[in-house]
Structure formats: C-alpha cells, structure tokens
Amino acid sequence: MRDYKKIVAWQRADELTISIYATTKDFPREEIFGLTAQIRKASYSVAANIAEGAARESKREYLHFLYIARGSLAETEYFLHLAHALGYLSDAQYCDKTTQCNRAFGTLAGLIKSVQKEASVVSKLIALCSSTLVLYGIKNLIS
Image 1 (cartoon, helix red, strand yellow):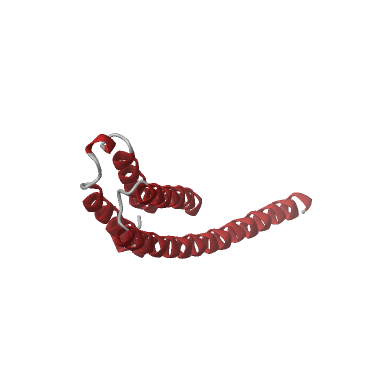
Image 2 (image 1 turned 90 degrees about the horizontal axis):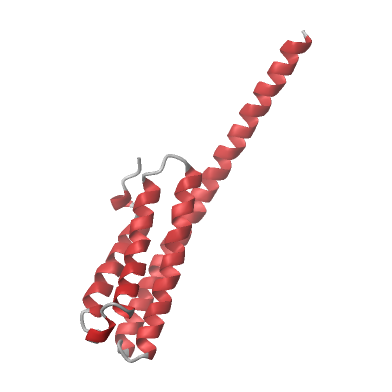
C-alpha cells in the first residue's frame, strides 16, 4: 500500500481543500447547503480519491480513482468560477484559488501519466508471461 500522505498530488489537493474551507466560511449563510457544501465536497473528493486509489492493489484501480480525483478537481474549479461570478470571492481570492487548482492539476496529471506508464509496463509483462505459458503449453502438447 502506498502512503498517500507522501504523494505530492495529495498534498496539493489537501492544501486546496483546507484553503477552500477557510474561504467559504465567509460565503452567504443561504449558501450553506448550496454552493458552500458543493465546493467543499468537490475539493475534499480530490484528496480522498487520491488516498483511496493509493490503497488499491492494482494500477488499474489506482488510475480509476485518480481519474475521479481529476473530475472532482475540474468540478472544484467550476465552483470557484461560479463563486467569483456571484461575488462571493474577490479577484485576489479567485486568483489564489485557481492558482492552487492549476498546481494541483499539474501534479495530478503527472501522477496519472506516471501510473499509466507503470500500468502499461505491467500489462505488457503479463501479456508476455501469458504468451510464454501458452506457447510452452502448446509445445508440451505437441511433444
């Protein structure tokens, strides 16, 4: 099992979530069950999915959760846009949060690419082993 706390993409997602929680404290009270809840959920989903994926055995499962994390990060980015458009975030806050989002996207993209590469190598090795076993089995059947 991978230690998710050592994964830079998780660290950036965690920092973003903590930052969003602090910022959304100032959102209007009527948004507590609306935008405030949605943006918080989307942001913590990024870090949570990276952590859950890190606990999975296979690279394929890990990638699945990384893709979900990427989708949640895109959702977070949209909610930041909406909060800014509604006047809940100042220009400076919006700029700061989108910068954090972009950094998180970059590290997550790098992690996904790395795991995809590892998964591809593993798949190729499995295919090679399977082929070898099949050929060895056929050779023994013929002999």
